[in-house]
Image (cartoon, rainbow, N blue to C red; front, side, top):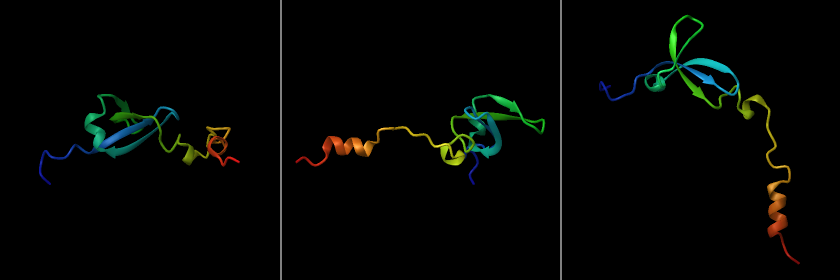
Length: 85
């Protein structure tokens, strides 16, 4: 690989703000994590990236699907544009 063409790849702590869960992984976001660091369980400090959704809080992975439309979009469409007599 050419030196200087790829972003730095290293350990990063991803912190899910909605679930309160953190996990250590590797990413190219290590160089631009915003300067925030956190001390991990092994005693080392790592850059931290806050994420809104992860597998710990996504409805697909948790099984907590929410009903967003109680009326139903298909029924509303049929009522508005359905066949007319």
